[in-house]
Length: 145
Image (cartoon, rainbow, N blue to C red):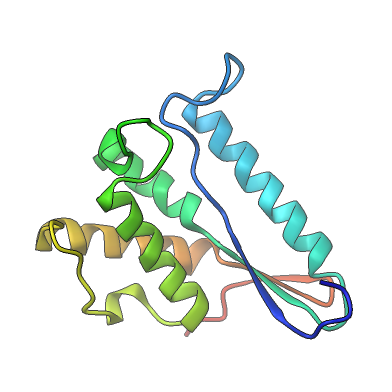
């Protein structure tokens, strides 16, 4: 990474449905992931020529978790279901293009209009409140108007 003038996007993932090992619940695993990704972004973004963003998928997942719970996961409780994948894609769209998820009319077959609108709102909230950008060692929140 050093020596290149590139933008880097880190994919902040979600905690497993049942956590991991006895010491982690979903919530504690999610908090550990958030802290870890933010630390990595700060370290990478301390170089002069690199802009690092953390795509806040894990935050969106946490926002949607109370409503959707295990519906965000595939059968293994770790990988995303169609709903979880759609949510992740919406957050990445906003992060990469610096546009609101509410601006897209992209839909996934099998995701109802109601669920699509709900997930778009969770993606938007995560993007507005939790996008982290680190440039030349300076941490800043989203610059989206």
